[in-house]
Image (cartoon, rainbow, N blue to C red; front, side, top):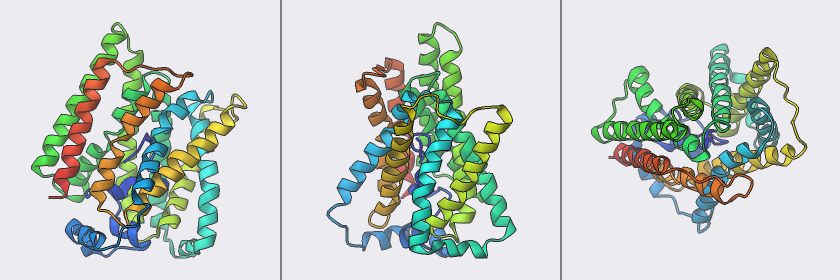
Length: 347
């Protein structure tokens, strides 16, 4: 989900661009620079400018590949034998290598010269939240099903809506409020089903709770990131925040005595695949698509991720995981609530 987390992880550029009440600004992602305060407040103006841009023929292909990319995040993380912190550390290492190249090619690294201490503080907080998100969500995959984990971690738009109301004074509309309640109900159905299937034990429920922690922390990450994304171009922003996340994970690993070395040599190609698929192909593709389609369209496309991750987990012989009826019903309710909130946010 990474990303919207998506699949528990967020996009390489940032999924905060994918909903009207998310922490970064579709105008900034689309134009590659800072947005004006008026543009940040007006989703209608953003959509008008996007709709006037000629859409390339390859757009549907990019969106389809993006969905495929983010859908692999959960199954790939499940297949890795290394601990969650090691998986997060190496996916970021490979991704940051690509981002570093883009910083040099675009020259966006020069914007770091203008950073204030306050910016570095926000970057550290944002990176810490993203690090906690990676740890909790990947850890959840060892305790609950891929389907349940990916559905629950995609509750992060609810955190953004609530956080925007409490911190930014952005009140949710009726459709968003209804979607919030519906998605919470779906999450409760998934958790109840997991507990019932486990005979009342707390193993699967603990995994569900970890996925919810992943949703909360990535939601905070998006909200904090809004302050930075408002005046940093795309690659400079993700390089700074992902770099802070990488450092936080290294510190967490040192504090807990967790080895970052891969447990098995077979984990190396999985780390590369997680960096290339969900983080580069998925999130980068979606941010490119934001140049040509409104943010709510990309948000709706991302809701396909739990479906794709569930199908992949069922088809891959190494996982062969069939979701329970509770997970399917609860997941459908969650996605319905999120879709209602996304569609309602554009009205």
